[in-house]
Image (cartoon, rainbow, N blue to C red; front, side):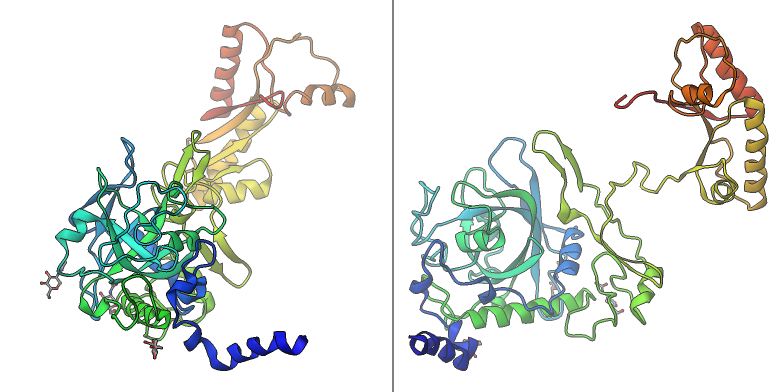
Length: 457
Ligand SMILES: *[C@@H]1O[C@H](CO)[C@@H](O)[C@H](O)[C@H]1NC(C)=O
Ligand SMILES: *[C@@H]1O[C@H](CO)[C@@H](O)[C@H](O)[C@H]1NC(C)=O
Ligand SMILES: *[C@@H]1O[C@H](CO)[C@@H](O)[C@H](O)[C@H]1NC(C)=O
């Protein structure tokens, strides 16, 4: 028994992957048992994150290049870019869109696809077996001379890159962008049960499509229905992608990559780093959150689009960090430092670095001398931003008895239980206004922070 079951596994191991990836396509023509992702995944040397970042920055529109991502009125529109149309060993179009599922070709009766067609543009591909990319028909026609069909392409989805071919066009009305075969879509998003009627809706998939005859998968590697040699697809994809990365000065291309971990997207991109820690001083000034990263959509429940947020990879002597910045950028796009300035350490730090300082004291003349000390310190260290921005905490204005009790620990405790140690003005509106004016005048305050007395407010 054990001999019989282990024998075929040993055989497979001996003859290696070359055989495994040259396939009888019909054996993989199955909605749930298509070719494994490893057959068309990019090599680990390809700098996927850096390419994704670079793709998001492409800005030169090709001709006839803007299409909605779906047929709904007001759907997001996406433009195909030609920034990469002239790198030394190839050319490519690039765009970022959603991913609808195409089953046209021999698997047109796939789930959720009542209106499928039995043919694809350059054959009758098997959507369960072929990772193919679909482009709007108008675009395919416009660029037919450089896109003869079966051109090598790639998608970056879920942080991974997979190769495919340009296999079909979309002729809907309106023509839409962001579409790939059943196999590609379900390999990208394996847990989402994507089908003909349920695509990946977020426009966070990067598409790269290589142009020209040298980028066409040869007939030795595919027939009318199937890819027959995935090794050819992968080796052509890796070669084209490496030379693209190289031309963009991204590491992982065929040039020597920078040493250490300087190659990550959004940091040190394009810079040369002498060692791993070099990166900490070598920010390229790129935005960590792209302008469209923050979505805050109550309708969809989507707060932010992760593919539009660059990771920070900070490695310095005392601090290592790899991950996204967890806060959305401030509207002014620079951090606003609001520092506590009552302790001597707070005064020293705030006077040197802060844009605003908050302080508190029971009486305005006590605050006055502290604020003077902050201004003096700021002037001494030459920090001009801090003046005119000192705030004091005032507790929520409330009507209370103005009888002041004797200051026993119990009474002090009772008093500060209402939102802290700030003053509590009591009286009519004009009494409270006079009170606030007096604090501003005596203490030279620039603003007041109104404390809360209960949570939630
Ligand atoms: C790419 O190069 C070719 C030949 O050098 C030139 O004709 C074409 O205009 C270039 N395309 C772009 C988009 O720069
Ligand atoms: C598959 O493609 C690879 C790379 O192009 C090639 O070396 C190999 O001979 C091909 N296999 C078959 C069975 O054609
Ligand atoms: C890549 O680096 C070379 C040499 O430093 C430079 O001439 C070229 O403009 C760079 N290309 C890009 C896309 O940054």
